[in-house]
Image (cartoon, rainbow, N blue to C red; front, side, top):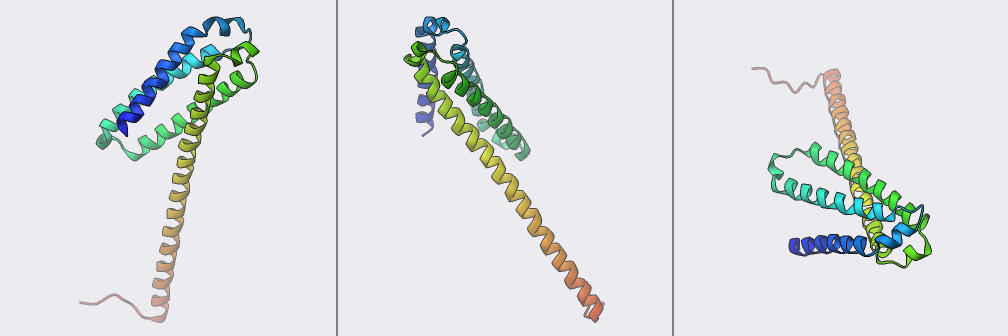
Length: 164
């Protein structure tokens, strides 16, 4: 599975670069559209973040949980920002000639992947937050109930303390 993911990432990057070169003039002729810049920024960021994620996976034992949570949050926000930018460039600012290019098709795929990545990263973060709050509430309920039991034992004189 790891090799398949690596092959898909390499193909994504290679096709992105190939379409950047192929469709440069089409995108340059479309004034007001930054689809070419969006695609270039996406390729650069995905390459850098992919290498960083591989580095993190190698040194898992040294990482703390809060570092993973922070990285999930940052990556989710960044991918969400890229998805918003890509949506604007693809569906609001593109010319008809750009919409028929390979770069537009690649950008649509990148937009979908960024939407899915942002959703998964941020929703898993929300699940982690809700789980933590649930655990804290359960622990508080058990703590309060054990204090109430202790107070009831003291009031009724049923102490569980053993004298030696």
